[in-house]
Image 1 (cartoon, rainbow, N blue to C red):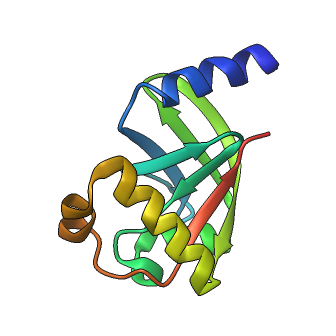
Image 2: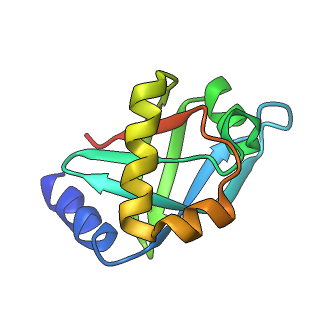
Amino acid sequence: MPARNDALKDRLSHVREIEISVTGRNSGRTISIPVWFVLEGERLYLLPVQGSDTQWYKNALKNPTIRIDARGAEAKLQAVRITDAKEVSSVVEKFRTKYGPGDVKKYYSKFDVAVLAQMS
């Protein structure tokens, strides 16, 4: 298992975007969407582009088990919502550092929540 985790972390360090899969809260179907992320140690941060109005975020609230795919390296993770304003702000800063303040401003419209997908 550790080898798989190392391979995933290695892949995450080389890509700018991953695909997450969530279970639809009404349909029960698997829904996949490309997202940006920030990896810090064992912590994988996700920032919904429309904050708490983002559909994949609403789905993850109902079923917090999500799957990530970084160009073939996959993992099942538990999504933990972050609603504390200071913590959300910290995640937003991490995204600005990685992707640039201009792109974060261009693509993200609401900063009221973030998600921690714990790597195990």
